[in-house]
Length: 234
Image 1 (cartoon, rainbow, N blue to C red):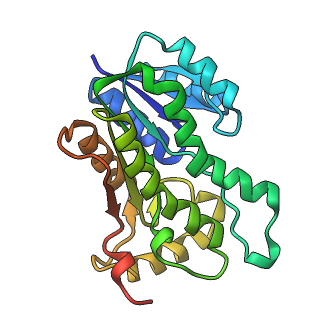
Image 2 (cartoon, rainbow, N blue to C red):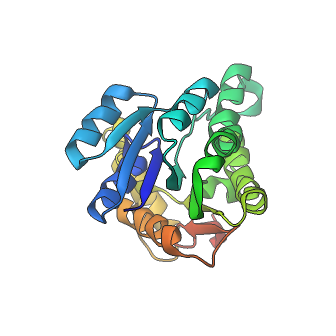
């Protein structure tokens, strides 16, 4: 049975990946900063949970020590949004955003690469905003865009372990539920900004992640899952 660590796996797309992986017969480890949420999901799907905080490197070292029996795959979905214009930037939140999306995956590689089996892989999460600049998306856009290069360079550094990234568009994963009634408008607007005429569903992303785990001849790539949104004029 292959073992997969899903970082950010307690909520939204991370939880969707963890659930599918468990259903598909993987031994799942839910890694999250919120241990209670990770424990709850782990109990639901028959997985185990471990504390992983991309902002706190010692938690990565501790998790790696706990999982020293070996890992086949790592999926990291972590983010720390800071959606403001340049004149409103907060330095601490700016650094947190880069740590979650850019520095974090590199530190994950530092601590977990010795545990990854040669046939294994890492899947990082980027996002369409990296290719669609707009007011207030500076931090999210730059950090998501940088993930493409992190995946490419880690693929060379960790070979033969494969490293790829997925770049979702606007997806109804539960992350937007906090918007209340505004969520419907957001999803409707995003649907109009794609070639396929709809917003994304969690399964669109999860299907691609699960394919990448098995795609033994794919490495260093970013797979875009956004209905062509980055190509369509605003």
